[in-house]
Length: 148
Image (tube, rainbow, N blue to C red; front, top):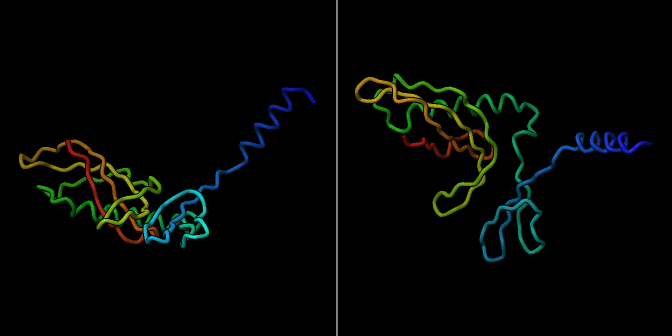
C-alpha cells in the first residue's frame, strides 16, 4: 500500500472517531465539590453528569429550553420599553460552570442577541445575552446581558 493510501485511510479512520467528553461531579471526603473530565477518585462520591444531548428527543429539549430563555430575557433585566425587546439567534452554547450561593454548578449555556429601545425611543443595538440552564435544561438559573 502506498504512503498516500495509508495516510488517507488513517485520516478517514480518525475522522470517524467522535470525541467522548464527560463532565464528572465529584464530592471529596472533605465535602468539597469538584467538576472534572476524568472519573471520580475511589475516595470521592459522584459520577458523570448526563448531557441532554443523549435524550431521545433532544431537539424538543433544545426548543423548549430556547423558549424558556427567550421568555426570561423579555422580563430580565428591567427593560425601558419591554414591548420593544427583539430577541434573535437563540442557540445552545454548551456546558459551563457558574457560581451561585457559594456553590459551583454545572450548567448549560444558551446565548441570544437582544435589542431593545432606550428611554429616548431608539434601539440601542444588539447585545449578547446568556441564559444559564440547569442540567436538565428545564429551568433558567441566571440571565446575563453584555453591557454597552
